[in-house]
Every structure is written in structure tokens, then in C-alpha cells.
Image 1 (cartoon, rainbow, N blue to C red):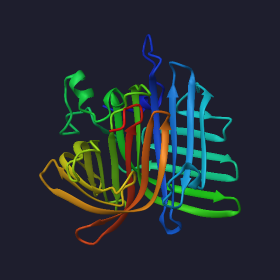
Image 2 (cartoon, rainbow, N blue to C red; image 1 turned 60 degrees about the horizontal axis):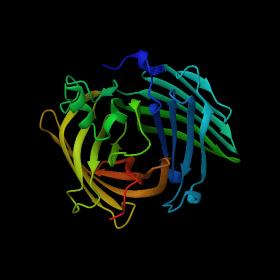
Image 3 (tube, rainbow, N blue to C red; image 1 turned 180 degrees about the vertical axis):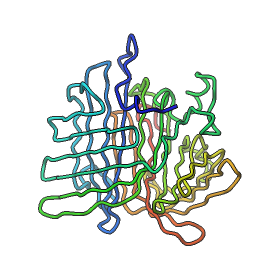
Image 4 (tube, rainbow, N blue to C red; image 1 turned 45 degrees about the vertical axis):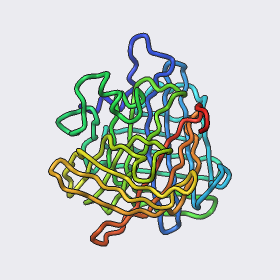
Length: 318
């Protein structure tokens, strides 16, 4: 069960050097084709906090196609994960597990985000919440889709408001998004290939899914459902199945179809087309092609979301 105590650092006895606590927050300004995210990783085992702010406005094939990137790997470890300011220009405050405020001012960027939850944190290890949860600890880690990196993990759909100033131009931010938070051993090699995807159709309907990935399998067989939910009118409906069909000519997808099957056997199918893509490298041994995706429901609703895959690089190319 996730509580307000989980906004603080989790520091076990004899903490492993590869221990990590992460927070991911993204925002959309679709009318300007802008997609951005803030990614934070606290590594108490080595005394460092990673801050990563990235803004994208096009289908980019290299890092310098981005509007802006500020990825600093070796900030000193913060004293409080729930309230800190870095010399990078990033400030973060978690008022509770459901309420966050983020500011970043540096390099001609002025970003302000207020993120308020539309649901309770979705704990992938809680059987009362997630039909795919496994009670046995070792089996649960194997079943996360991301190994020990998701030893403790929640996803949460949030309302995001704020502003983005780029140089002299200002954009209002008003969107629905999905954030996540994890803690546990997170080695930088041996990552499990993963898909993390969500679609938001206003405050009353969102989908989120986590899948394992085999890029070498045939189209339609590359993804295996692990966890997810449908958020409908404030009610969280854990998913017990799902499937993805992705058209990926090379590294980046161009279109996809996602179906989640909720706990009551209701199927939620959405179709996506990519608006922006970016070769994110959150860790040196992990390449994560990330996209802002336009989603459509079968009944004509139009939404926005993220389609993010992560692939290990420390493996021999086939």
C-alpha cells in the first residue's frame, strides 16, 4: 500500500550501491507540439541525485533535435526527497503522495508545474488494486516487467497546470498526464526491455499500461502485458490483460493500437499516432525512444499521451 510516507527517501540498512528512487513527471502542450518531462533519480548508495529536464517539439532522431536538455548525473544527494532545490535550477516539493510542485529556471527555460492526482497511487504489488499483482516477493519482481527496478512502484494519473517559458515566449500548461515513482535496486546494466504507455481523454477517462518487450518478435507479438488500469469517472479499474500492436519501421514507432481489459472484462481499445519522438537516454546503458502520441478511441474521442519503450544497450546486436 502506498502512503504519504513514500514521498520520503527509502534508505534500507546496508543500502546497495545501485539503490534508486525515481520520480517521472511529463507535460503536454499539443497545440504547440511540445512534450516535456522532468525525471529525478536519487541514488543514496553512492550519494548522488540525477536531474533530467527535456523538452521536445518534433520527431527527432538525435539528442540535439530536442528544444532543450539538461541532464546532470552528479548532483549531491538531497537531504529530503519531498522538498529540495538543486543548483541545476530544479526545485521539487511533494506536499503529499498526490500533490506535487516542480519549478525549473535555467538556460532560458522557466518551467512551473503543479500536479494534482485524479486517483490514488496505483500500486502494482497490491492484489486489492492490481489483478496482476503477485504475493510472492521474488515472483512479483520477476513479474513487474522491469525487474528489481520496480520492486516498489506506482503509477498515477494527474492533472497538470502551469507554464513553460522558452526564451521570451510563454505557453500555458493544462493537461492530464501520468507520473510514476519507484524505489529499489536499479542496476544500470541488464535492464529489462519495457513499454510504458498511457492515453488521456480529459479528467474522466485515462488508460495506462506496462508491457515487457521483445523487439525481435513479429508485430503484434512483441509486447506482453504486465500491469495497468483504466481510470473512469474517478474510479480506478485494474487491468487483468492487454495487448499492443505497434508499427515500428526502425527505432521509433509511427502508430500503435492498445487494448486493456479491466477487472470487469470491459475492453478499452485506443489507436495512436506519433506527434513527437526523442531518443532519451535516462541511463548510459539504456536507450528509451519516447513519444508524445495522439490517441483516438473507438467512439471518436481524441486524447494525448506517452508511448515510451526502454531497451538495454549492453547486449550483443543480433
